[in-house]
Length: 136
Image (cartoon, rainbow, N blue to C red; front, side, top):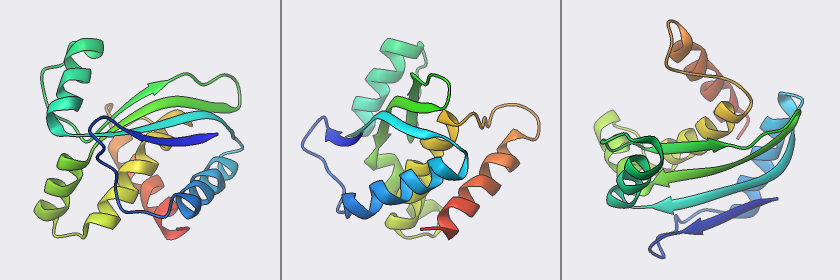
């Protein structure tokens, strides 16, 4: 089950039925099933608090993914700062919806096992994001 929640009653304007169907489609593409995935939409300050409290990181980010996957079942808590999504979209010259969908699927791609911190991994992640966005 995929749920959409917020800290500050901050919810993106999106069709959650279509969004859920797309996420499920991407999971199937990687031979995974959806378990419990919780999207939590928040502000920059709220995601900074999560980053400090749980990861000992002192910086803003667009998404934090807590992975609770077991075998082929995807489960996790995905915190998304809508403030950062908006500012990144503006900085990159993209519309909010495109950047929003990229961040939403970025968390799912982490859950399927794609990383973006090591050598060459960012390019693999970006290619997977582009492939997923093409299926939206």
